[in-house]
Length: 190
Image (tube, rainbow, N blue to C red; front, side):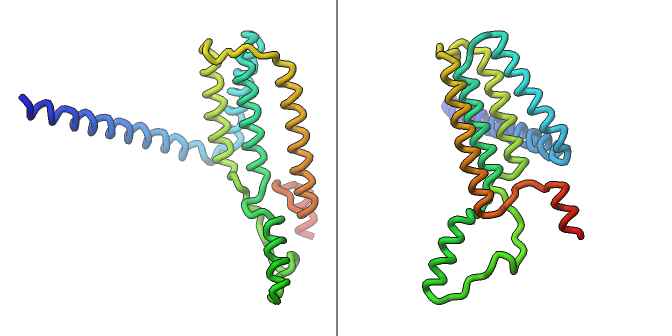
Protein backbone atom coordinates (compact mmCIF):
# COMPACT_ATOMS: atom_id res chain seq x y z
CA UNK A 1 0.00 0.00 0.00
CA UNK A 2 2.87 2.36 0.79
CA UNK A 3 4.37 1.68 -2.64
CA UNK A 4 1.14 2.79 -4.35
CA UNK A 5 1.12 6.09 -2.46
CA UNK A 6 4.75 6.71 -3.41
CA UNK A 7 4.11 5.99 -7.11
CA UNK A 8 0.87 7.98 -7.47
CA UNK A 9 2.38 11.49 -7.00
CA UNK A 10 5.09 10.73 -9.58
CA UNK A 11 2.48 9.62 -12.13
CA UNK A 12 0.37 12.71 -11.44
CA UNK A 13 3.42 14.95 -11.84
CA UNK A 14 4.36 13.22 -15.10
CA UNK A 15 0.79 13.49 -16.41
CA UNK A 16 0.64 17.17 -15.51
CA UNK A 17 4.03 17.78 -17.14
CA UNK A 18 2.94 15.94 -20.30
CA UNK A 19 -0.32 17.91 -20.45
CA UNK A 20 1.50 21.22 -19.92
CA UNK A 21 4.02 20.31 -22.60
CA UNK A 22 1.24 19.41 -25.07
CA UNK A 23 -0.54 22.73 -24.39
CA UNK A 24 2.72 24.62 -24.81
CA UNK A 25 3.36 22.91 -28.15
CA UNK A 26 -0.17 23.73 -29.38
CA UNK A 27 0.25 27.36 -28.36
CA UNK A 28 3.62 27.57 -30.12
CA UNK A 29 2.08 25.99 -33.24
CA UNK A 30 -0.65 28.63 -33.18
CA UNK A 31 1.95 31.41 -32.87
CA UNK A 32 4.00 29.91 -35.71
CA UNK A 33 0.88 29.75 -37.87
CA UNK A 34 -0.13 33.40 -37.38
CA UNK A 35 3.39 34.85 -37.66
CA UNK A 36 3.26 35.79 -41.38
CA UNK A 37 -0.15 37.48 -41.09
CA UNK A 38 0.95 40.83 -39.66
CA UNK A 39 -2.10 42.88 -40.65
CA UNK A 40 -4.55 40.26 -39.41
CA UNK A 41 -2.66 39.85 -36.12
CA UNK A 42 -2.75 43.58 -35.44
CA UNK A 43 -6.40 43.80 -36.51
CA UNK A 44 -7.20 41.15 -33.90
CA UNK A 45 -5.28 43.06 -31.23
CA UNK A 46 -6.98 46.35 -32.10
CA UNK A 47 -10.31 44.50 -31.97
CA UNK A 48 -9.55 43.17 -28.48
CA UNK A 49 -8.53 46.65 -27.30
CA UNK A 50 -11.73 48.07 -28.83
CA UNK A 51 -13.83 45.44 -27.01
CA UNK A 52 -12.00 46.29 -23.80
CA UNK A 53 -12.66 50.01 -24.26
CA UNK A 54 -16.35 49.29 -24.94
CA UNK A 55 -16.44 47.21 -21.77
CA UNK A 56 -14.88 50.06 -19.77
CA UNK A 57 -17.23 52.64 -21.31
CA UNK A 58 -20.45 50.73 -20.69
CA UNK A 59 -19.48 49.28 -17.29
CA UNK A 60 -18.21 52.65 -16.03
CA UNK A 61 -15.43 51.05 -14.02
CA UNK A 62 -12.07 49.30 -14.10
CA UNK A 63 -10.29 52.56 -14.89
CA UNK A 64 -7.15 51.46 -13.08
CA UNK A 65 -6.96 48.36 -15.30
CA UNK A 66 -7.37 50.60 -18.35
CA UNK A 67 -4.65 52.93 -17.08
CA UNK A 68 -2.27 50.02 -16.39
CA UNK A 69 -2.89 48.66 -19.89
CA UNK A 70 -2.22 52.08 -21.41
CA UNK A 71 1.06 52.49 -19.52
CA UNK A 72 2.15 48.97 -20.47
CA UNK A 73 1.31 49.51 -24.15
CA UNK A 74 3.19 52.83 -24.08
CA UNK A 75 6.20 51.07 -22.61
CA UNK A 76 6.05 48.40 -25.32
CA UNK A 77 5.71 51.04 -28.04
CA UNK A 78 8.75 52.92 -26.77
CA UNK A 79 10.78 49.71 -26.72
CA UNK A 80 9.58 49.05 -30.28
CA UNK A 81 10.77 52.51 -31.42
CA UNK A 82 14.10 52.34 -29.63
CA UNK A 83 17.15 50.82 -31.32
CA UNK A 84 18.68 47.75 -29.74
CA UNK A 85 22.04 49.49 -29.56
CA UNK A 86 21.62 53.03 -28.23
CA UNK A 87 23.47 55.50 -30.49
CA UNK A 88 24.14 57.87 -27.58
CA UNK A 89 26.06 55.14 -25.75
CA UNK A 90 27.92 54.20 -28.93
CA UNK A 91 28.89 57.82 -29.47
CA UNK A 92 30.26 58.02 -25.92
CA UNK A 93 32.27 54.84 -26.54
CA UNK A 94 33.64 56.29 -29.80
CA UNK A 95 34.60 59.49 -28.00
CA UNK A 96 36.48 57.45 -25.40
CA UNK A 97 38.22 55.43 -28.14
CA UNK A 98 39.23 58.66 -29.90
CA UNK A 99 40.76 59.93 -26.68
CA UNK A 100 42.73 56.68 -26.40
CA UNK A 101 44.17 57.15 -29.88
CA UNK A 102 42.16 54.67 -31.98
CA UNK A 103 40.49 55.91 -35.13
CA UNK A 104 36.67 56.11 -35.00
CA UNK A 105 34.57 54.90 -37.91
CA UNK A 106 32.31 57.44 -39.53
CA UNK A 107 28.58 56.69 -39.67
CA UNK A 108 28.47 57.33 -43.44
CA UNK A 109 31.09 54.71 -44.27
CA UNK A 110 29.15 51.60 -43.34
CA UNK A 111 25.54 50.47 -43.61
CA UNK A 112 23.97 49.90 -40.21
CA UNK A 113 20.41 48.54 -40.31
CA UNK A 114 17.92 49.58 -37.66
CA UNK A 115 17.52 46.76 -35.15
CA UNK A 116 14.71 47.22 -32.66
CA UNK A 117 15.04 46.59 -28.95
CA UNK A 118 11.61 44.92 -29.11
CA UNK A 119 10.85 43.12 -32.40
CA UNK A 120 7.41 43.55 -33.98
CA UNK A 121 6.22 40.02 -33.24
CA UNK A 122 7.14 40.24 -29.56
CA UNK A 123 5.48 43.66 -29.43
CA UNK A 124 2.29 42.20 -30.91
CA UNK A 125 2.40 39.12 -28.69
CA UNK A 126 2.88 41.12 -25.48
CA UNK A 127 0.25 43.70 -26.45
CA UNK A 128 -2.30 41.00 -27.29
CA UNK A 129 -1.70 39.06 -24.09
CA UNK A 130 -1.97 42.23 -21.99
CA UNK A 131 -5.15 43.30 -23.78
CA UNK A 132 -6.77 39.89 -23.31
CA UNK A 133 -5.73 39.85 -19.65
CA UNK A 134 -7.20 43.34 -19.17
CA UNK A 135 -10.44 42.30 -20.85
CA UNK A 136 -10.73 39.27 -18.57
CA UNK A 137 -9.78 41.35 -15.49
CA UNK A 138 -12.61 43.76 -16.27
CA UNK A 139 -15.10 41.02 -15.38
CA UNK A 140 -13.85 40.67 -11.80
CA UNK A 141 -14.97 43.16 -9.17
CA UNK A 142 -11.70 42.89 -7.26
CA UNK A 143 -9.96 44.87 -10.04
CA UNK A 144 -12.59 47.63 -10.01
CA UNK A 145 -10.68 50.01 -7.75
CA UNK A 146 -12.56 53.30 -7.28
CA UNK A 147 -10.45 56.11 -8.76
CA UNK A 148 -11.19 59.53 -10.22
CA UNK A 149 -10.64 58.66 -13.88
CA UNK A 150 -10.08 62.20 -15.25
CA UNK A 151 -6.87 62.47 -13.23
CA UNK A 152 -5.62 59.15 -14.63
CA UNK A 153 -6.50 60.23 -18.16
CA UNK A 154 -4.80 63.61 -17.74
CA UNK A 155 -1.68 61.99 -16.26
CA UNK A 156 -1.54 59.42 -19.07
CA UNK A 157 -1.85 62.11 -21.77
CA UNK A 158 0.94 64.18 -20.19
CA UNK A 159 3.13 61.09 -19.79
CA UNK A 160 2.47 60.07 -23.40
CA UNK A 161 3.39 63.45 -24.86
CA UNK A 162 6.49 63.90 -22.71
CA UNK A 163 7.88 60.46 -23.49
CA UNK A 164 7.07 60.70 -27.20
CA UNK A 165 8.68 64.14 -27.41
CA UNK A 166 11.83 62.78 -25.77
CA UNK A 167 11.83 59.80 -28.14
CA UNK A 168 11.37 62.00 -31.23
CA UNK A 169 14.20 64.28 -30.11
CA UNK A 170 16.42 61.22 -29.67
CA UNK A 171 15.46 60.02 -33.17
CA UNK A 172 16.25 63.43 -34.69
CA UNK A 173 19.53 63.82 -32.83
CA UNK A 174 20.91 60.44 -33.90
CA UNK A 175 19.17 60.44 -37.30
CA UNK A 176 17.38 57.12 -37.26
CA UNK A 177 13.89 56.27 -38.45
CA UNK A 178 12.40 53.07 -37.03
CA UNK A 179 9.98 52.64 -39.93
CA UNK A 180 10.30 51.89 -43.62
CA UNK A 181 8.68 54.90 -45.21
CA UNK A 182 7.59 54.67 -48.88
CA UNK A 183 9.10 58.04 -49.88
CA UNK A 184 12.46 57.07 -48.40
CA UNK A 185 12.56 53.95 -50.60
CA UNK A 186 12.00 56.04 -53.75
CA UNK A 187 14.87 58.36 -52.90
CA UNK A 188 17.18 55.48 -52.08
CA UNK A 189 16.59 53.80 -55.45
CA UNK A 190 17.43 56.94 -57.49
